[in-house]
Figure 1: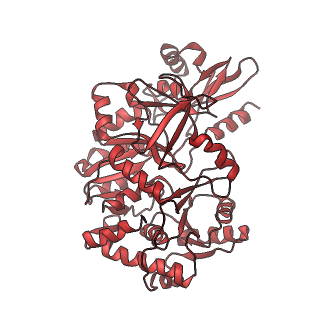
Figure 2: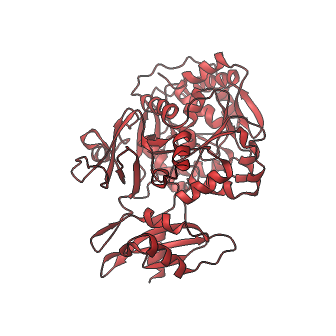
Figure 3: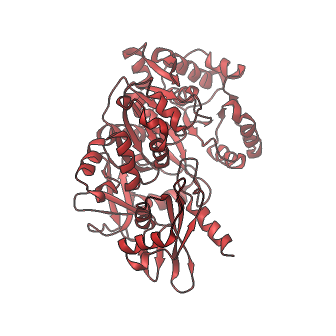
Length: 511
């Protein structure tokens, strides 16, 4: 089934209900959004002559038009290629060229960078800037009927971050996205029509993926007026919208919990905050629960299995917290309904409970493969399982605990050390705001552990106290060799800590 049918269904069921909003202001009802989508789809197919399956790139800030372009692509039977708007023009050029995009939509603030990228790529893509006469003409074309698509036809090319090389485009089909939507309602957040989702995280990634289940249940898509994440602004939107959900990285939740406006926010209007993109440390989760109550659910997924590997509903998070089950709170939850998950050794043999290995996934949410990259597809999907590159272990109750990315694991003196375990301990100290642990070359042990630590505002870090805390809670061989205080940890546009940059920083500092 074509994902665009959700918009058409809402236009019949809730024609005058809000579909798109900027801050507190409604800019389109479902009837109006369906009209806009059908006309823009007509412009793409009939005016620009795009053929079914061709790619359309979105290099856009968060805005209502983002949702319209995305669903217009699907309405027209095209493949959407949402791209991180914060990338360098050279990075944009690679993705535009590699995806073979015929059209690139850009918001006005990104027009120059996008035009540079298309020129650098030597691509045949046509750039359409939102709000220009060219865009308005396309959006005013004659509407077309929703294209018929097969379940395995492409819907979304999801380009990875490329931290270990060139980005790869995960091919996500309509079947993949519908499986993710089904699992969302069962395993993450039960459906509640009539609500709203606040898109404070980039719509090119997690927040945009979760637009799909939100649209499926008829929720309004709310874009902050700033078009990005501002903790005070997001909390202020609770004054205007009910049954609010949002997707957030753990760093965003931390900032909301620490914001002065949290004390007076209308929390009765906040239904759920779903965290993902990185593990949530137990100390941070407890602080967030203390401020906002039991309004948190979590997911673990990858672009290759969008938002769909394991998860915990609000009820499961609440139950673990009330029982003071810290191990379960630190876990990534249970396998989601539409996938099988196993932990395996180097030969892909399933490991018993408690043993650490690579996390493998298969099911209807798992990508078809990587776009124009048969070698990477074969390697990542060998044996019919998605090889995530993440390390984890299952407990006896079936909860998965993430250890680390395989490339982040530290091997010191022949022993495996998982940085997250040390980070969890450091974050128990009241003066520590953030911590990240890396492995660095060591002539005697192969690798040694180094901790980068950020102090809370107004606090002074006592390194001896941090060291004593580690010695009291973890084995001596895991204890950091050095502690480095840093003003802020380097992060990606999605809030992930960039350990590659910390390693480079350490190498530079060490000469």
